[in-house]
Length: 321
Image 1: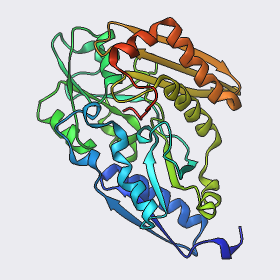
Image 2 (image 1 turned 90 degrees about the vertical axis):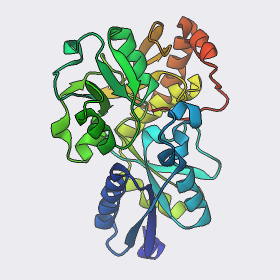
Image 3 (image 1 turned 135 degrees about the horizontal axis):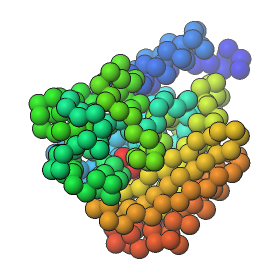
């Protein structure tokens, strides 16, 4: 685009956690290389989701709480773009906001971390496992009913500290965050999607701006990674159709191999006693249609009953951890 269309300064809004700042700096560095004539600065903010750490996300409004303050800054003009973990982004964007780009995905898998044990299978009966999401909890309870699953909130460093203090025999975290922070050495084992299906959007970064900032939407295009976007959009379409929220144990994961997109999804009861799962494969360009179809398949197979029992509100979908 013409140099005259490139703003002289762009402010990037982000949460102020160590991981969120890493992600914002990563995007800033890529943009600086693309547009060296522009000054990029970072505005770090504390969100309501960061402030409330003693209550589970499902009880305080879901992960959308992590981006509301950032969107307010975009609306007010205090920031131009915001960088998010895609799994924090609500399934339906608020009016006037759009995802200008979805960057290439980091490792989407969950990571098993323990100072004493090498795998989930090796944990003795009664071992306490810490996790922040109902998605992981339901899968753990379904496959390892002899383990105790306890809530684990806080940033990555806080969660690792609680493990090191002996509060947990093991914890489950997203591998992407650990790798981005240079903490990949703390990963004891990576959990395959067959063992722990990832969250919708896990490992991917999204760049948000106002829809009227067509200049920014154009500027962000080089950061948009089409295969990642196709996968994430398929996952989000499934979750949107299911009314996915922090109150719904739900997983969705898509990957492209040999030109074919494979989308897997599940809905479960929190105790893991009921788990409905299915998958579809097809053209990557049809990912959103596949997502909606997979959601319908899951509902027909019994997910509708689970969602009803959980009190899910499909008309007000939000993100899930």
